[in-house]
Image (cartoon, rainbow, N blue to C red; front, side, top):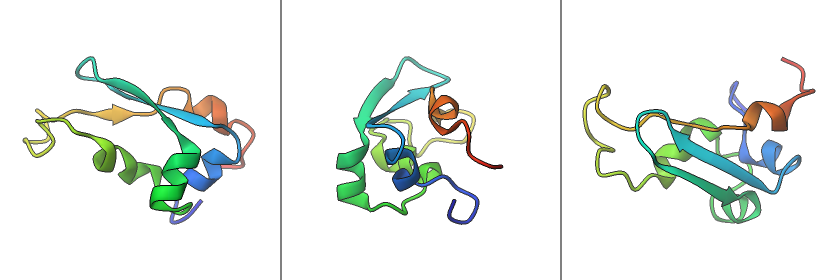
Length: 83
């Protein structure tokens, strides 16, 4: 973990794809980790990935209005890592 954030490289070592979803709307998607690592590097933190990938028109809205992205299945991918 770089600076306390899980990186794409760490997830890519365990899985080939990652799911991204919004808790406030119906937006969902799956992304190839190999492709993400190739374009943004292994050390790019997942905490910044949703903002980079999002094409949501509410992206710049107030915090209570914009999408709230999370990674369903990330916990299962990373099980076994030390806290």
